Image (tube, rainbow, N blue to C red; front, side):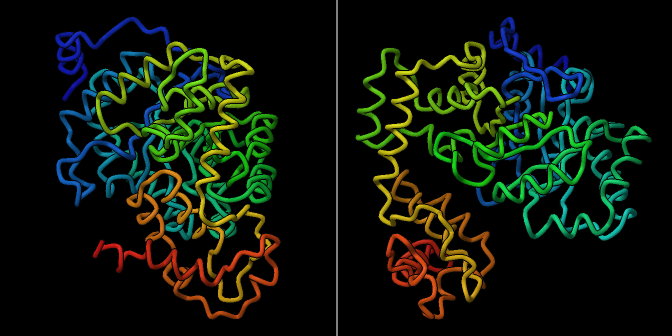
Length: 405
């Protein structure tokens, strides 16, 4: 569906309004990005059992609506929607929209073994996206395991050549690990322009952490935040205890607004990336972005969010503080990650997402691989019966057992 046809449909339905979107300087680049970006990872599908079946008429209207409302950054990746996200985005952006947005996609860092592989993958992505350039090209999901491997192939020299020949404009990375790993990656290359991190009011001490966000911003990188509503958990009807706390606010806000505005309030944040699955998400998020800015929340409201965070934490059955004293596990089990997913089930009254993410853990690192050596329990300052909780977590989260629930 081309630009003019989509615009005509949106005009007919009176969904195109004058943009009052806020824009922020994108790190040290010359780009001013909308504070809301469109993530093409959770597009609507026609078959929930097959992520490749993108509902293209609906998803096309959603992206077009976002652009018409002022969103000027579209993010996708090689593997999103089984590889169909890039192809779909390419079809939507042609015939008018491509030059209205900065386009970001990501290299699957486990695939390339040489510069030739990098060139082949990038050229494939350019073909999928029907464009001659990627504005922001990110290494996808860097962590302590993938980082050394991608460095071995001299990725920086390759990136400089790809920038020189015009196929990419800016080079960056998305990230899932801890602050020391983030700092090591940032310090390894002085021409990074963007980093994408998970961050929300529940995850200030998790993964990149607030320290990592500030460090990246101080180094001149544009910081794009993913999971601002923690996979949708913070946009749901909150537990009664949390709902009562937010009810004390002088100004009523939806759960999604509390979460998004908290991230937008952080001065180091360049953009919040939202993976939207329905038109109502686009309409609501664009409306929120149009009345958002830095330092919007009052001191009273910030204290309410801090109390809400603690109320969520009190719902956790496992009193894990993620101190990581139990790590590394003798048998390489991801203890702290497993406990986090188990607690998520109880905090957000949701099993679907934690089970999905547990299924993404290497089977050799799941709870049922515990050899009961007791080393972790000897090291735990909270005196958590770790072996017992690992069994309970695996019973609840393991895909082979979850299918019978």
